[in-house]
Amino acid sequence: MSPTGTPASPTGTSAAPVPLPARHTFRSVAPVLALCWLAVFFDGMDVSVYGAVLPHMLDDPSLGLTPAAAGAIGSWVTFGMLIGALGTGTLTDWLGHRPVLVTSVLVFSAGSAACAVSGGPAAFGAGRFLAGLGLGGLMPICLSTVMEFAPPRRAALATGLLMTSYHAGGMVATGLGLTLAPALGWRSVFWAGVLPAVIAAPLLLRLLPESPGVLLAKGRTAEAHAVADRYGMARPAPADAPPQGAKGRLGSVLALFRSGVRWATPLLWLASFCGLLLVYGVNTWLPQMMRTSGYGLTSSVSFLLVINAGGIAGMFLAGRTADRFGPVAVSALWFLLTAAGALLLGRHLPLGLTYVVVALTGIWLFSAQTMVYAAVNHVFPPADRTTAMGWVTGIGRTGAVVGPWLGGVLAAGGNSRLGFAVFASAGLLGAAAIGLVAVATRRGRG
Image 1: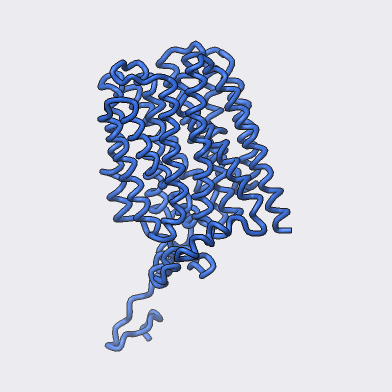
Image 2: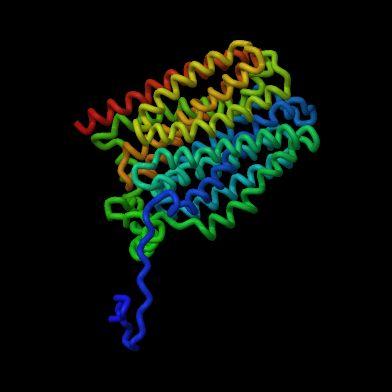
């Protein structure tokens, strides 16, 4: 034994001390959160870019885009997201989080490039559908990864922090729409959407760790323990590992309807439907709705920037509040406040007051949906969360399909201002659905 108490090596020299595992804190998992934040940033940028340049596209006679076609195309991208999200849970449990995430980034970057070179509405819509496939796969993976790596009892805050990137991306997309589109044309903004393939994909492939639960399920126990130790996490137990094989993947889906959660599952789907109808409907049509309400083009596009800025602030507020009071209660309240904000926006208020209402509505609107995702972490055990998240986001994408389509129908009929009442109704329905999740889980466990 050496004088310091360190065991001596056979040669008589002191052996190097064994490093202690890291403590599980936000600091220990910061690299993982940062990489997922970057991926979702580009997700938000790609989703919001369509709404940011839509007024310029409608004014471009060479494209031949009508309001009805614009609404349909907005739904094509979200239909692609639906397909991508539903397949994500199964693919990630089979192939792993990292390869599916990198592929998703490459796919939606390719879709953005296809939009930039499109010659008409059909080709443009095909590009948006391709982008939707990649975007739909990205979000469930990043959400489940962050929830797995988040410190104990901080999953809601970690989810909120992750989703700030979505709105930061939306703000950048709006900035590009305000600067690049008038000077270089709307196509230049979609060329900027190719950047994720150049920036995010190499970083994710090189630096993002694989899920310890997936590694354990594949029999790579030593690697699973090494990843958990590196980030200060508890080592995964066999019960935390997703089932493997075709039978196991089918069992993961059937587990969403087992005793205890069978009623909570469809309620989460309905809440996600309402939340995503609001998110994508507002991101696509807010500038045009405000324009038809009497505001100028520049102000109308700027409202999209302001509502996403409110979304960033709302994520911090919702995350911290949900870790204390639970994401279900917070989501229900946020949906109600969103409905109130949508009704106020339907009135032509003074410009300064309108900016305040838009910002406040952003605080509630986007984080209401995010807390639906956080509720998945409370309702389902670790082995089922990736599949549950894929289905909650996937089924919810039907709302993302309906929102832009419905906005297009109202715009084509000259009734864009009715969109505010439609969005308020979605907020009320979302509040009822997520509020009943608590009742359903209590009855199921009883």
